[in-house]
Length: 295
Length: 325
Image 1: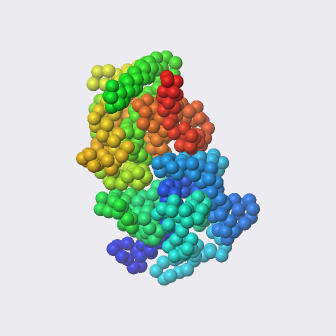
Image 2: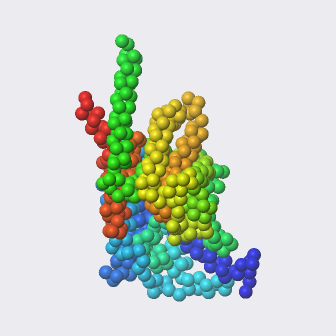
Image 3: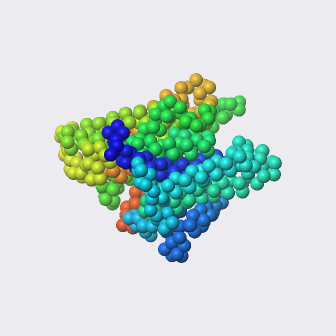
C-alpha cells in the first residue's frame, strides 16, 4: 500500500473524489446564483430549496409516475424552472425598484416556506433514490475505485458549466444578456424585451439548481433539509470567487470542493469550516474576490 | 420670517412631536412590562425582553446604518454559551457571567466586523451569514458547549452575591432592568451626533465620505455595539432558561431577528420590541405544529417584503401622522 505524507493513497484519492463531487455541486449552484445575480441583482436565497425541489421532483417521477433517472434529468429542470418563473412574475418583479436586500429577504422567506412544507409532508429523515442501472458499478483505476455514477456527475456538471459559459460569453443571446446586465434601459431601447429576459434568466438559474438536485438525489438521500446548509457554503464560494465572472464561479466551485476534500484527509476537524476560513482570508487580501472586478 | 427659518421651525416642531410620541410609547411599553406578569406567564415575558433587546441591537445596524447582518445569531449564541459556562463551571455571579458573555460577543463582533465591512450591501449579508455558520460549526465541535446537548442546568445564582435569582420576581426585575437600560442606551446612540453620522452613512455613503467621515470606523463601532448588546441579550436569555443550546447560534435565529425587526418596523425605535413580542407569541401558539412555525415565518417574511415594508410601528406612525393633519 503506497502512502503520500503518511496518508494511504486510497484514502487521499477517495477524499479528493468526494471533494470533486462536492465541487461539482458548488460549481453548478454558484453558477446559477451568479447568472441570476448578474441580471436581477438579487441573491437567490431560495436556491438551496430549489435544489431540494429538484431532488424531490426526481423522486416523484420515479415513485409516482415510474419515470426513471433519464426522464428526471429532462423533465425536472423545466418544471422547477417554471415554478421559479412564477415566483419571478408574481413577487420578485415587484421589488426591482427597491433596495436589493429586499429580494434577498423575499427569497429567504420563500426558502423557509418551501423547506417547511416539504418537511411537514416528508419529515426530515430523507428518502432513498437508487443509482440508475446504466450507471451502477465502477472502474478500477489501479490506484483507486471510481464509481461510474460519481464519474458521471463530475463530467455532466463540467459539461453543463462549460455549456452555460459558452452560452453567455460566446453566443448572440449571451451578448444581449451581458448588455442588459450593463445597461438594461439602453438594451430595452434597442427593442429587446428585457423584462422577459430577466424572467427567463431567473427560470434558467433555478433550472440549474434543480438539475444539481436531480444529480445529487442518488448520492445524498432526498431530504427536505439537503439544501439549507449547502446554500450557505455556496454563498461563501460565491464571495470567494467574486460575482463578476461565470468562469470564476465554476473554477472556484471545483477548487473549493477539492480543498475541502484535502482538509478531510489532513485535518478532518476543520473540514466544515475551511471554506469559511478561506473566505475570511480572501476578503482580507482581495475584498472583491478572486475573480471579481475591483470597484 | 424667511423661508429658511420657517423650515427650521417646522423641523423643530416635527422633532418635538416625535419626542412626544416616543415618550407616550415608552410609558406604554414600561406599563406593559410592569403589569404584564399579572396576566401573562412571566418567563415568556422575560424571553420577549431578551429578544426585544436582541432585535433592537440588530435594528441599530440595519435600520440606522443600513447594514443587513445575516449572522447575528453568532453573538446571541456566543453570549449565551459564555455566560452559561462561566456561571456553571467557573461559578461566577450572574452579573459577571453576563458581562463575560457580552465581552466575548463584542470581541467576536470586532473580528467578524473587520472582515465583513470590507464589502457592502448584499455581500455584507452573505459574509456575515458565512461567518456565523463558521461559529455554528465551532459550537457543534468545541468541548465546552456540550455539542447537541448544550449547557444544561445553568445556575441563575445570586445577583452581586446577595439577591437569589431563583426567585422569579427578582429574575424578572433584573431582566427588565437590563432590557430597559439596553433600550435607552440604543435610543441615546441613535439620537447622538454619532447616530446622525450613522444615518448619514445609510442615506448616502459617498457623501458621508466626502464630508470627511471615516465611515468604516463608524460602521465597525456600530457593529461592535450591536454585537455586544446582542451578547447581553443572549447571556440574559441563557440565565432565564438556565440553558445554552445550539438553536440560538443557528442561522434560522439570524433570520428570526431580521423578521422581528422587519415585522415591527425597520428603523423605528419601538418596532423591534413589537416585532419580538408578536413573533414569539406566534411561535408559542404554533409550537406544537412542528414545521408550520417555519412556514408561518416564511409567509410573514414574504408579506412584509411585498406589501408591509414599514412594519407594524411604521404603519401606525404613518397613520397617526395622516390623522393628526
